[in-house]
Image 1 (cartoon, rainbow, N blue to C red):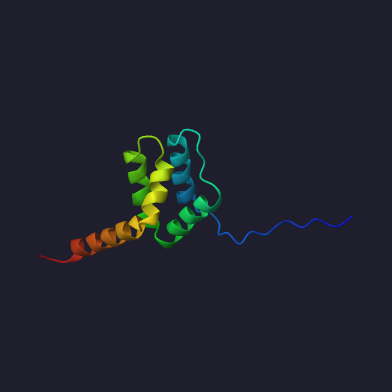
Image 2: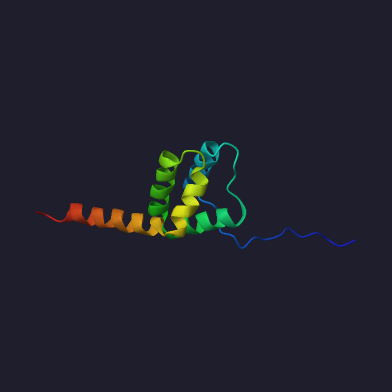
Length: 99
């Protein structure tokens, strides 16, 4: 009999802010789960553009009729998380410039 070793995942740890958003999305999606490659896509987007991902996820929660997870994934495919973060950062910079 061989010794079993725990499988080490190369997937990064999921931050609390990400887990909280996923919980909200899954609750609103009425039984749908965010798992597998779709979850990894979301985690990567969150790690690369945390502010933009949060903006797009909250927008999906507000605008989706039935499936905010599907709307979120559609938005990520269109790089909306990157655009949202860049716009938010640009807005931050505008507030710092004296008129």
